[in-house]
Length: 251
Ligand code: ABF
Image (cartoon, rainbow, N blue to C red):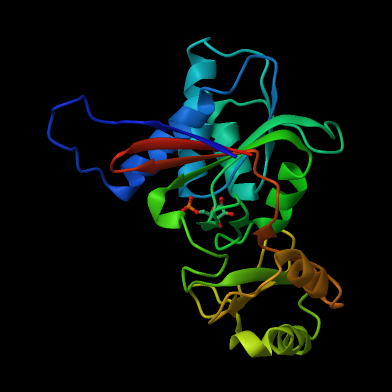
């Protein structure tokens, strides 16, 4: 794995204090530099990816990019892209995507990701799994020593049918890591519904779950689980924006 660091402040000038959203925007704009006319693009979801989609729309409008086709990873991104005039398609018509740009909730030192706290993990995994290149964009707060290390949840998309049964199975699977499984609710206190009409069970893990591939296989073997939010070995590049500059990590 190689890493390239770029400073955000001119030499000898005082450090610039940037907000988290400004850092997200810097990472997003850097990623859009990888976009070329004629590409089929996976369009990510979330507040970081939103900046990338805005920028792609802006470059299209200015005529600096042409013949782009976007494949959105959520209904929200689809609406945003339509409002920006980005031509859209889907995986049925474009099963191979040149480049996807999307955020993440956690990034480990091997560029494995946790995604899905925004609830779009299934479509994100389908789109990003079909990419030749997946550029993940984050601010430095997303870097963790191990997946689950932020203390926030590992999201699992499950079918609504007997979700409690599935949640118990998930919790038991990681009992030794002190796992607590909770159904995600929306702001009205109702179960959060994904774009696919499913629920999300959030797994709170107190410890490192060890071998991620084994954990992934075990989760996917539980009937009732649709997909999980670990994106293992999928990101080809991670762009991290921090107070000291941008770091580009390549697989
Ligand atoms: C999506 O948005 C995710 O998979 C992840 O859940 C989230 C990251 O959020 P944000 O960019 O708003 O921090 O990319």
